[in-house]
Length: 144
Ligand SMILES: CC(C)(COP(=O)(O)OP(=O)(O)OC[C@H]1O[C@@H](n2cnc3c(N)ncnc32)[C@H](O)[C@@H]1OP(=O)(O)O)[C@@H](O)C(=O)NCCC(=O)NCCS
Image 1 (tube, rainbow, N blue to C red):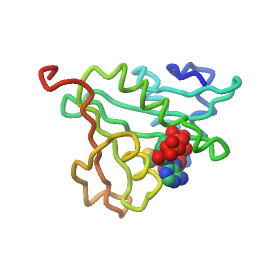
Image 2: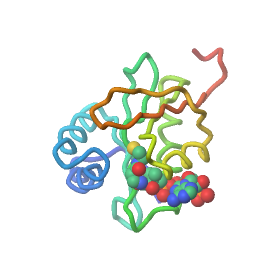
Image 3: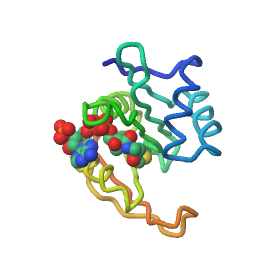
């Protein structure tokens, strides 16, 4: 498996994967805006896009993962783990945040397995469910 920055030719497939998480209406704008800022990573296996991770670096001076989605036929094979490994490597901030809806038990288990700790929540979002925040310290505290 290879994790790399998304390229223009990947976007159709990435938008389809993202639609499962952010909905078909938002997926195209969401994916393209992250691609323009080079904040979109893909995991490629046998020439196919197996998963995607979108992040931003302008969130309270920290890195925030806004989306991770893996092809339903390729889950539980370390794709998300590999995507998070790369965002950890390239994050300009040593403070990495990620989030998920309180109803997403699989995602909550994944965050725990990847070494994230709970870091609060957001209420009053249009999704109707509480969004749980997770935090992972990437480098020693002297790094900022
Ligand atoms: C959540 C999701 C991204 C995980 O992707 P994945 O590639 O299957 O995850 P990985 O294989 O890298 O799993 C990493 C660890 O997370 C945990 N985990 C992942 N899926 C799990 C499941 N179904 N049940 C329990 N634990 C799970 C495991 O501890 C796993 O490590 P292990 O397999 O060595 O035990 C994937 O299920 C998905 O795309 N779901 C739909 C979209 C979504 O919910 N995204 C998150 C919110 S934005």
